[in-house]
Image (cartoon, rainbow, N blue to C red; front, top):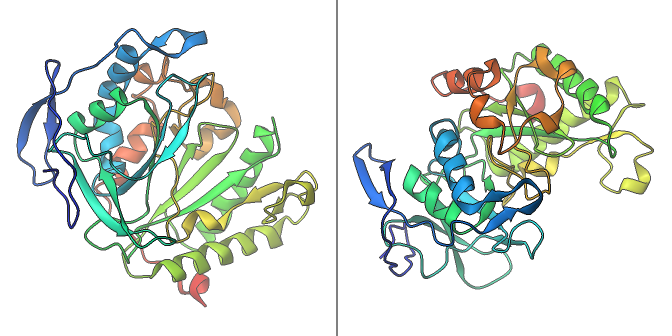
Length: 319
């Protein structure tokens, strides 16, 4: 039976392709993961096969796993590649291997629990890649304290093909967070936008986190109402860049660093430094290029943040 807090999934045998992985308790283990149909094209135009994609996840795993570990995980799967049907998966399938960890969370609109996958190790990451999980969306909570989030994210969504505007807003967000004394991390979204992420202590409720994100959005909008809006409807944005505080709601997720997006160009959500923003192109970071870019300063900054003490949400954002 799969490891779970309250819900389990049935076993599934795998063969060959052994991978190094790390259990959440810290014990080093090796589990077999088979890559089935390794020549199946997931990104046809770029000739990225399933084998090559699982190799990509192996290459970035040490950088990616700290941002997945112990978190309920939602996935975008595309079994026939980006040109086929895609769907959002929360419940761990019953055929998952017995060693896949899960956490049971009540579904808000149904009288049942959802067994979210928890990706703590390289074997789980490889198995999910073999399932054609092309996007990884972790929750801003860990399974031991689901009621206490530990990340605040500003989602910067510009109009189509307006990455320069997203950069201007990101720099404005960083100006505000600096004024508030907050330490921030920045990454591309893997699409046209940017994410500003703030690791926080687990001292606020999900409702308080949403309030803080909304207040932060308001402060940024007040500084540049001509450039920034919180309006969800595209038709009402007037060409402005949207900041979306709902990414900090109960049940909300944000794409993980190093996760690909299910797009034809196989772009990846990639960590960057603020001083790089004016010189980068989101298309530079893809499944094909990122394994050779892990020595850049952005990944180094995110790796260093793992060891830094978390910070409190400023009182200014909670009142």
